[in-house]
Length: 200
Image 1 (tube, one colour):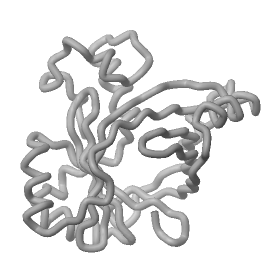
Image 2 (cartoon, rainbow, N blue to C red; image 1 turned 180 degrees about the vertical axis):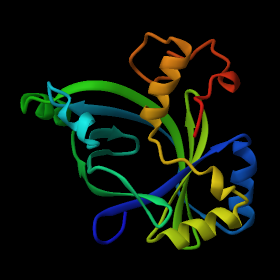
Image 3 (cartoon, rainbow, N blue to C red; image 1 turned 90 degrees about the horizontal axis):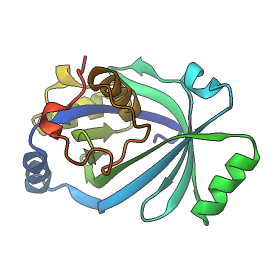
């Protein structure tokens, strides 16, 4: 997130998660957060106003708990740009009860494993989702993000602007999945190599 409270980032689908990790390490990237399991709760109004307007209200738990608001996204400088406001909370369960008491409903649970690296002025995250592996690059401007992607051997023209949940919604439609939550348990027994959403 930038000093102005904006998130600038892009994603890349990874065929070889280990290779990018090795590239980062060989180029001197510093580990900011070792691989950690994340659980994320997404909330919305009863009328799904946030989904319709492209906003996000998320409660996340990994090594700590954080509450995040994201405004509608737009493409700027070739990367995804949106307002992001985030702060830590001391009690994950109480934060969930607080949001529900305000009238927000839990709409989806999703999880992933994430490792974060600092690399040449940007943050690079390696994400293991139930349906595949991805990299996110977040930085202060589009040029820094693009330069880092090229240094890491990522194809800039293949970058992704969709959220993980938007990709999951596509996959649910393509595969006819009836489960709501994006969890590793729900994907047990499914060959992830053949279940990636059609990315455009």
